[in-house]
Amino acid sequence: MKAEILKMLRETEGYVSGQELCNKFGVSRTAVWKVINQLKETGYEIEAAQNKGYHLVSVPDVMDTVELESIRATEWAGCEIYYYDSIDSTNTKAKELAEEGHPAGTFVVADRQIAGKGRRGRAWESPHGTGIFMTLLLKPDINPNNASMLTLVAAMATAGAIRRVTGADAQIKWPNDIVIDGKKICGILTEMSAQFDYINHIVIGIGINVHNEFFPEEIAETASSLLLTCGKRFHRADLIEAFLEEFEKYYAVYLETEDMEGLYKEYNQMLVNMGRQVKVLDPKEPFEGKAMGITRKGELIVDTWESRKLVSSGEVSVRGIYGYV
Image (cartoon, rainbow, N blue to C red):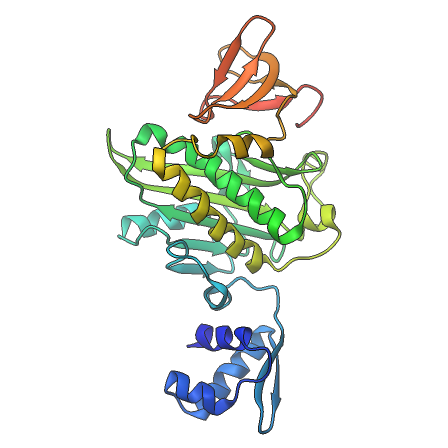
């Protein structure tokens, strides 16, 4: 009921009377009063006026279940939301929920991760109140060989959400980083549980630097946050809801063909590597060339002086010749 009352306050420009809330939810005035006080304790500024009712003045930067459910506008993404102040890894929790039978669209979000992972098992830690750490559970009926492209779909959704909420020119560094002004804002980690020809589940984990004011010396040259790049703070819940909406949109297009057929042109417009010299850190044989966009299968096209090569995202890393991008 708390989320429903908050949603009603949000959607009403003026005041909502206590009696109207009682009638809507079939509860007493005391019950409504308790919910209003609980919301105030969380940080919501709510005016109470005699003979008028309640009016929502401002909302805090929280991204708990109540907040996210009160702004949710998606069809299936976020159908179940699990929020944690601190967690080892949102991906790990989402995989546990998948094994327990929770549906596609189940969403895990945390204010802090203490054992997060990046690609190749890199550690990913975070202080309270600075970032978004979230994982979306999927159970697609697709060929497991096509699953790696979902990282690209998630990157498009994340970049689109950041652009929408902040106005910043968020771009994609193939295959799984979001950058602004040449610095990493976000990383994406996709993990799959599958049989030979059947997917049990896929979890897509995303970490966004939102309010970070500084970074460790070893990554300060390549990492940044929305606060540092945009010079202002944003409500993290707004970014999360925008991501879920953008993901639903792009995912629907992806499912039509199980590849990037309907998305690769838009993806290439977001691609920060496009037309740039890159170094492909292939463990077999590193090489350099010019990035020319992606194929319908999500491979990065790299023109070398002798041939055109197609690079699969699961195999290698890509770096700029003169820096991170």
